[in-house]
Length: 104
Image 1 (cartoon, rainbow, N blue to C red):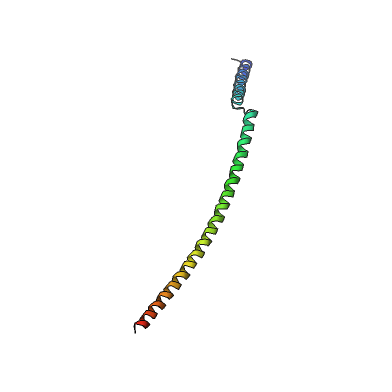
Image 2 (image 1 turned 60 degrees about the horizontal axis):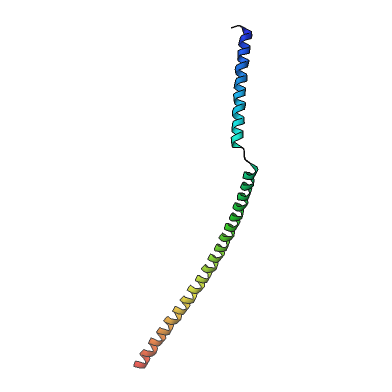
């Protein structure tokens, strides 16, 4: 094989390799192409996801506010209970004191 035949054989091999690469690229692009309807559906899904995230954030904020309100209300109720229990304890002590005075 002389130099000219080697150059031609190398050129043919390189051209075949280039052709196979181009054909493989064309096949991949052909099968992975996204249609406009799919893009539209992806946009709708993205919008729905965004709205769902906003709704979730609003729900979390509402729940945090309600939890704070309930915690505050529970603290107030506990304070009222302690005050009532203290008053009841004082009334019982006074009643016991009055009973002991009456018995004497």
